[in-house]
Amino acid sequence: MPHGLVPTPVFLPVGSQATVKTLTPDDIKDIGFSMVLANTYHLYLRPGIAVVEQMGGLHKFMAWDRAILTDSGGYQIFSLASLRKVSDDGVIFRSHIDGSQHLITPELAIQFQEALGADIIMALDECPA
Image (cartoon, rainbow, N blue to C red; front, side):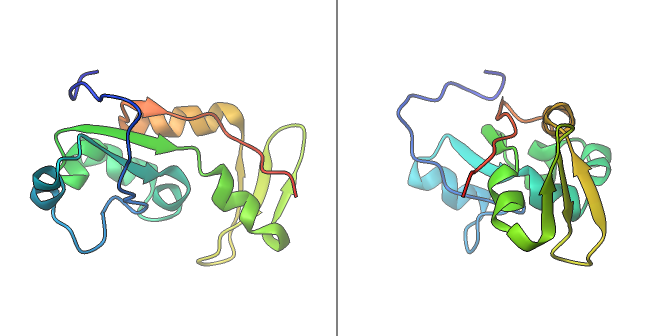
């Protein structure tokens, strides 16, 4: 991987919105982590994929020079049962922040994660009830 080897199995600290709460990147390294997890859903809604991309990608945005795994955001979308609708095209959902409507397809989920510059990306997953 471009940002170092990650032995598996591995435990990942979660930085949903591009930050691991209460810890600096140096703290995370000092603990011994070689990878963190960021959430595409949260980054898509705020600050936006384009903003992270303009800042030089997720690694620069987070000030993290090791590996990053992004999840697709599928779990977050599907946990908003009253705010989403599944179609053959993807998932239409309303933002929990401002109520705006969005469509995420499996292809877009991959494109977003590639634009973020993640080292490991996940396919859009559906969490059936």
